[in-house]
Length: 142
Image (cartoon, rainbow, N blue to C red):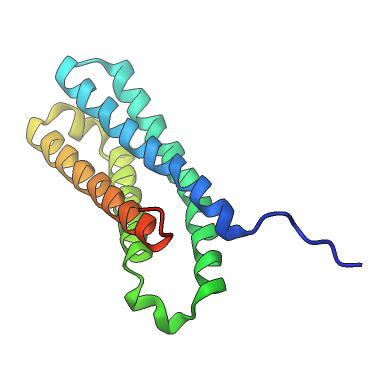
């Protein structure tokens, strides 16, 4: 007896992608507010939002890869700009998180380093948004 599921990974993936998008953008907002208002609590909220964005990215990326391989093959990967952008943005955000953990004091007390960090963080979240837009086009949601 074969049990069939009432859903597929291609239906679940669009649900999972909203978590990292929301968490990374909220983390960026908290970081910007922490910079402007000089509040450590907002910086901590940005840290944990970014951490949970990375955790939720794992599930979004895995479900996206499974959905991709259900529809295409590895030879189609170079033409799959949505997935490549999302993976690139997530890798950049992961590196930024590592820098944030390792060089917290340097970033916190150096205006130039903080500005560079926020610029790279903003760029990667923008890249994430653009990749999400391309994903919506691929899924024919727009």
